[in-house]
Image 1 (cartoon, rainbow, N blue to C red):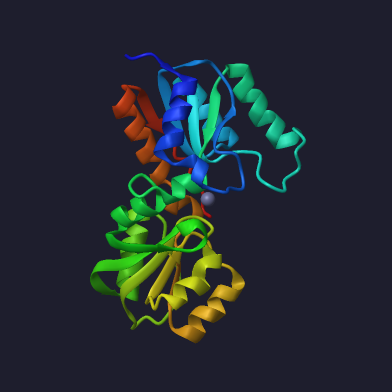
Image 2 (cartoon, helix red, strand yellow):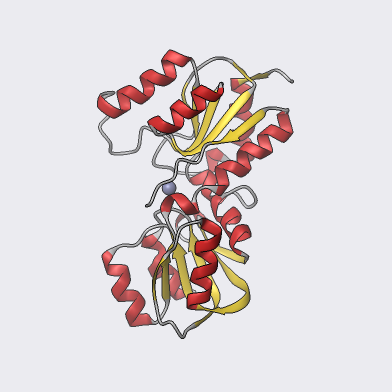
Length: 251
Ligand SMILES: [Zn+2]
């Protein structure tokens, strides 16, 4: 197996995901520095304690996640949950790398591109802040309940759907994770449905009043695929071992 240094891994991902082009809410790149040589990379959606422990038991040198630490506006002090997580990484000399918006947006490996591939959506364009969200068409028109069943089957989680059961969906917009604030912009695109991870109270009324279906398919469930695709890409490119740790989350 090839010897890979942490800084080379960081630099490669930084240019692959065009990290410097994004204004983000948390730092992209190495958030916690561990050992310098990387042979085994673990991936996960969120750097929760359970993901850290599972990755450590497997022997990971570095863990790559979509949701890392140090979010804008959060308390900067390293106490409580944050202390336990960071202490775990430092004790085991494991690096944590996190990629947020750059991993949503990448045209092949990104959460939105991967979600489209898994759900059979053909991407036609981008919208929303920093072009994070996508729109396009279904491979074939489907009635809303059938589309919801297919999504639930693929994502292994039944979505919460607000919309007319008789509506036929062909044009769709989507944004992985907590993208419910993009619903209004999706309406302007003239789509039949909007899919994201989470839903807010006001989205229900807007969906009913506009006739545009809102599909809340799970924040975790819609963000599983980008970081896995990144891990698989890195494993193939550098000859690393990679394993994805899916700690299921009902939200
Ligand atoms: Zn997210």
